[in-house]
Image (cartoon, rainbow, N blue to C red; front, side, top):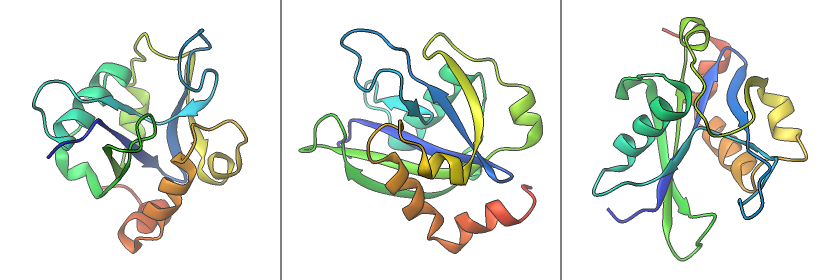
Amino acid sequence: MDFTGAKAALFCGTGILTYLRDDLPGLPWPGHWDLPGGGREGGEGPMACLLREVQEEFGLSLSPHRLIWQQSFHAMTDPSRTAMFFAGWLTPADIASIRFGDEGQRWEVMPVPAFLAHGKVVPDLQRRVSLALSDPAVAAVLTGPAV
């Protein structure tokens, strides 16, 4: 599959793992809230790309079974290409073990309604999260305990 990269909505309770992008010249969407993920390296598949990025950005080694939804979209930086978007879940222990990498200013588990209403989120991520939450399996992550 040809794709540019992968992002994910990773939920813990009623929150979503986010990070504030750096505010540097030339960086797309400086100072905006973003979700874990990034660009593809080599011939890796979408899930491998996402899991590598989560490890690099947050120090979390997640197993693939944590990702319960996926869909392809037009890439935000090049709409002629495809990007993958996943939804999954984290535990409070995962959150406690985060070791934030060197990209971004800070991270936060933001309440989902606050994320969906925020005025400075990387474009289209709010729509993608809303689409993921329209799936009953994803919505159940917010209402039930993560296992």
